[in-house]
Length: 522
Picture 1 (cartoon, rainbow, N blue to C red):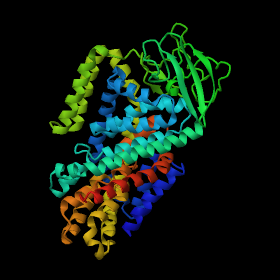
Picture 2 (picture 1 turned 90 degrees about the vertical axis):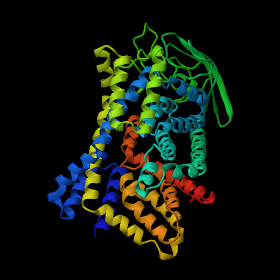
Picture 3 (picture 1 turned 30 degrees about the horizontal axis):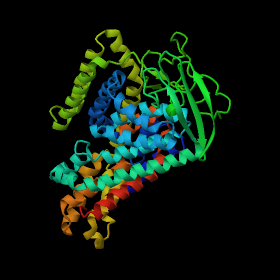
Picture 4 (picture 1 turned 180 degrees about the vertical axis):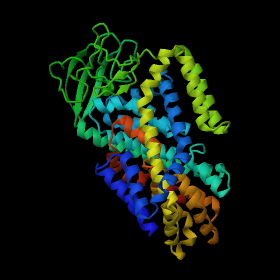
């Protein structure tokens, strides 16, 4: 009975949020509370919730200070060179924008933290998607899937959990899987290319013939929806269906030209130019206060504001600290190194890092308060979602639903499949790491699968490698706190993200699993 109720509870949660009948926070709290009463454990609800909150409190603390730390690093310009390179590649071609999203997410994922990846990726790419009227779920789906593949790094979590649960070395799991994971990453890039072509066919292409950007490289899009305080002009032409629809001069005071579609030109397009909504031509820039230039300025004066209030990466923002660039780079490298070497708990490292970054970059108290306030919305949204998820996981675990679901799934494996436990583990990892936390799967289910595999002559290492195949889908699980950073910053409904992403993430996971079998490591 608990097995059925567990699956029904998860299905109810997913259906309600995908149909937008409930918000994720409300669903994470109310649905498990109802099912806890349904199974006759209402008296223990408080204990389950407190235990769940206690288990997730370090994660919430880590996310809180990680958001502040990397938010400050974004403010001061640490990641601007990487972002500029990606945006220079993207220009205003929807296909390149989607591929650039995948590349940027994959690169930033090297730090092993999903929240960081999503903050940087969305901050850089959101203005492009908005100005070009591209689908935001394409951005969230590609970023989450790319991060899911990269999440298998030894310091990313799943590989370390598998190694701990099965008492094997993490390098023995990860290193042989590198070719299979590389194939999975290529599959993400191919997916991004295909989705980008679809967006290009839907929207057309805005190409840049000439850009005169003060202090910028020609043909280089700005980082966000606002430029500097000088007039900007560029010749733009729209290409749709392979044909040029004419060219005209779109001049704007302070709005970016069509490059990357990120800025929007402040003036109307010249004769012969086709003004397509969202293309960047003729789209008025946000009003600003910079000496009549039309420069968009955030309320805090640090970031560019998109037309719906999003604060992007303005290359002229006053929070930049170019003289402290190498200090910030060194601090970040030191922080990531300490995380990998586990010198201190991760929440403590981010707490110390955030305090040091704020103190050095913004020595004046009002500036520190302004930076904390600028990132407080993300902090509140994410930590609130984490503690709401604690109710869901607490009830799921405390009532025994997870154990019964895992035992049922293992028992359904036919005896004849015993010799294929690597394949079975890989297939089970896809739904199980989506429907339960990584801790629940790796510490609760994986040892049982490994024991069954050993009984049929399948090595523990093969089982461990197969278990990380489903991470591409896991990163879009409602139980992963980082996904709420992604959808929250991108202003995408979680249900919309789920509907779009699940099928592509499952396909990517199957590619990783198939490649692992093909290379003989699973």
